[in-house]
Length: 293
Image: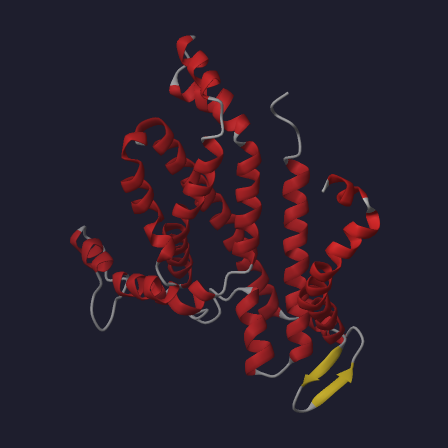
């Protein structure tokens, strides 16, 4: 088998089917989508070459700018909170809850398997202000506050979306980061404990540096997922109130499939692709230092 892998012709022959499928499924649609950014129209009315008009329109479109700002704000806040919450839960499990492995992991991971629509409906009922008053408003008024339309107020709606998505996703990141934490050599941890290192010193000097590779993977996974958020926002607020919680993905969907502007929608999608690439490169470059040396 080793001699086969050393044969370049045999290796190329074995890789060709997979590369062909990948090219047809991934590369061709991407290139096709790029060509749409230089055209206007749709499949019904036909397409017309417009050069850079779609790009010029994007840079002058205030609605697109609002969607871009919301997407960036959502990605930064969500990535920070869900990775931090997941890391905190993984550390909690490593240091205090190891004897309750199955129960704790199942409880933490449970929200991940719930359908997005069901979770959105639950949060919609919890923060409801009319026609019935949800439990959050009930508690809020019991503490002396006024009846508040959380989902109808832009600043509150953003944080309700954040709260829902953090609750739904932190179990996934807890399990992901826990898988990285258990790879840390136990003899290193035991030696540090014998030397009198406190829990905080263990985390700061041993656990965090050695878990940085998996933490980096979690950050990249999170930021790419949050930049492409769509289903949870559509299910909870549908981009409202107004366009206060409209991300680029939802604006792209409406532009392409509600208004039939395939060219402009492809331009928005391409901007989102560039954002994901830039975020990934930025995270890699900023965290490529080998902290284990």
